Amino acid sequence: MTSTWDPGTWRAFPAAQQPRWQDAGELEQVEKELGTLPPLVFAGEARELRERLAAVSRGEAFLLQAGDCAESFDSFRADPIRDKLRVILQMAVVLTYSSGVPAVKVGRIAGQFAKPRSNPTETIDGVELPSFLGHMVNDLPFSAPDRRPDPARLLRVYHQSSSTLNLLRAFTKGGFADLTRVQAWNQEFVASSPEGQRYANLAAEIDRALRFMVAAGISSKHPEIHEAEFFTSHEALILQYEEALTRRDSLTGDWYDCSAHLLWIGERTRQLNGAHLEFLRGVKNPLGCKIGPSTTPEEAVGICDALDPDREPGRLVLISRMGADKVAERLPPLLRAVRDSGHPVVWACDPMHGNTFTSETGHKTRHFDAILAEVAAYFDAHRSVGTWPGGIHVELTGDDVTECLGGGDNVDHADLGKRYETMCDPRLNARQSLDLAFRTAELLQQS
Image 1 (cartoon, rainbow, N blue to C red):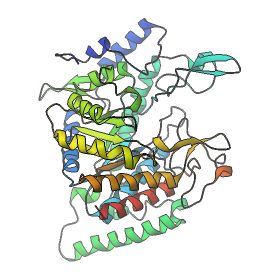
Image 2 (image 1 turned 90 degrees about the vertical axis):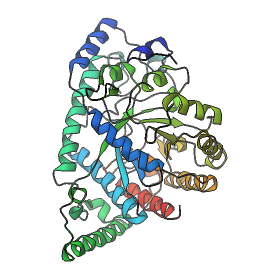
Image 3 (image 1 turned 45 degrees about the horizontal axis):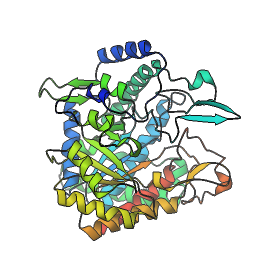
Image 4 (image 1 turned 90 degrees about the horizontal axis):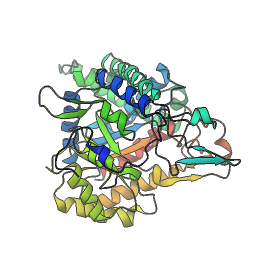
């Protein structure tokens, strides 16, 4: 790490998972234009999220970070955004009402357009082309023009993220998130399921509680009842985009990456001598870092030292993504090492990425039972060490997809092709997401 920092010092470090931009002049022009555009989020909002995450680090709240695997230019419409938000709100209600601690809601949304890949290129029938890196970089069809990294896409990401944020703010502040409407959030295809019925029963209890408050003379006009706090996040993968949207706060003089409230570093880009840690260590946003089964205790503490040298509550979220069969062995040593180092991190569980496999039909998928098993083992690990299992990080959609096996619908291999719509990784549908929320709430009650 450099002794001094500015938004461009990362360029002197090895940067993994970056596109091979073909026209440096075109990229530079896009970066300059992005640098003149208004921030997507504001420093004060990022500070509010840090306060909420500080409560999580103390065991006083629970983090729900959820949303799409990768956002798409092709399916940008208000209804899917609303439905995704609705599922996240439903999950948060389940977690809060069942566990007794507030849920901090952070979406993988309004910026999650880039994806790391195992290989920089893909070969089909002897033709080698760049891998699909998400709509921030290139397109999915396997052709040279589609797979060419195109800097103009960075501008399109900015404008679509801006529109998405406008919708989210309207929904969360304009009445859609009102707790008096919890029953109305039950979508038709969810309401007909066991998970939906269980949610309907919980919603009826909330409705009775709100009516009791009014009858007892307690005001129901509190903002928390009629509005929802909702924050955005994405993986800070394409560093030219992140640098271009970094601004100095006029109140504090600190730098903030104004592309999202929270940025995270992926498992493939968390090198201690890498550009991603170098860039994010200098911004004051809350930060996340994915850590997988190969992470050593020394590496975990090194990441904390780099990203949270002042040991500030709410600064850093460590997101474990181990795989259901590795959590019990690999996670406790990391929990102990970070605890003993004095870093007040938020721990979260990503039960998705370590449980991905290719089905017999050729679809990339995950089994709901493995997802549940990883979450349960994650809670067991925290219980054994005496640390707080601060949150979950999941890929989901509000659409009625068939991408993950199992769950209440008992999706099997033959069902995957019916409504397999993801561009990259398989997502939980609304029924499976609600079921996960109820199961997680039960584990929280035992913590």
